[in-house]
Length: 170
Image 1 (tube, one colour):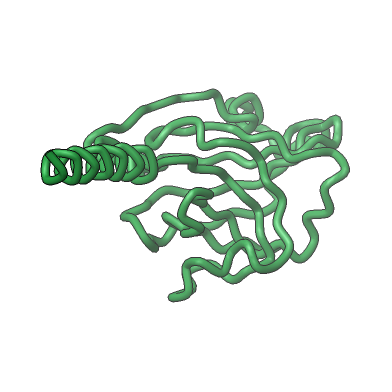
Image 2 (cartoon, one colour):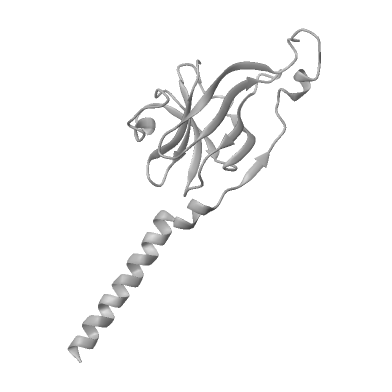
């Protein structure tokens, strides 16, 4: 009887362990992806063949993604609209899916071998990653001081790792 109870307890612990592991790692995300195509804030300005208009959205800086914990590619652009609002645009993004992915502007240098360092300094969280592929826009809060922020990072908050980062000159 005692042996049966021990085996039952081991089985319960194993099931709980598997459940926690599935929740934490979400291994099925290695096989999933999503795509979103949003219109660029620069689209209206790009359609005009005249010199840049001061009332048109302006590209402030851009950078190309480098892979870190996961293969990541695409471009990051910081755009200022005529009303003074700013947007981070990810163009041609291709990355892996993962649990709890976010988009940040950070003062940490892009492409570090220490891909867990991006939350050690100053950063501005722009929200959850909308999709693993495509082109999408993220509003930069009006009160955010972006001076000195040197990179965009696709950040996995659950495991504190960068999937990929892009250098900026802000």
